[in-house]
Image 1 (tube, rainbow, N blue to C red):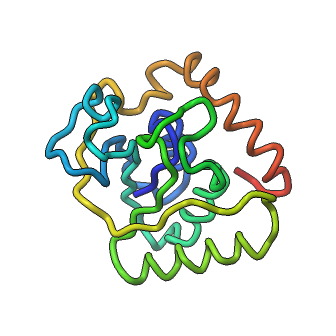
Image 2 (spheres, rainbow, N blue to C red):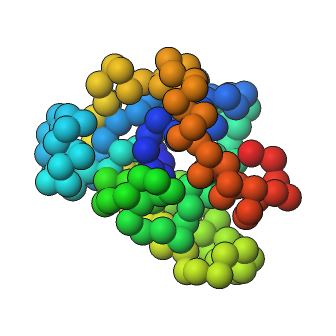
Length: 169
């Protein structure tokens, strides 16, 4: 599970890769059972918007997913992503086990050592918690409203151009 701003903008970069079986938008990391979008947006549930990704590791590795995550979520902004502000948009890698934790931590250390960013890397790596799927109208938003999605992606695309022009996103 990855959190990096509005879950609408987090689905398409992962969904378009070979080996991805399913990507769902939802909420995790909080204390409320079965939260709604309105509750999470009120900043009272402790949840963050995230995507849960099912993948076939014969085609794509967890390391590759983490590498893509760094390219789509600003790791230097602890209180939101791009135009999305607030704790429910914080950057977090939610790991399912020690294997994923090790990969995420090593990747974060490598990113810090690269000096690609002037500001500190603040993305948290936390144990996975229950994931609650968001309401159906939030699922596959990039397919349902591509014009709005493209407008919302402009700040993320600018980030990618500035920091990741040397990599394929």
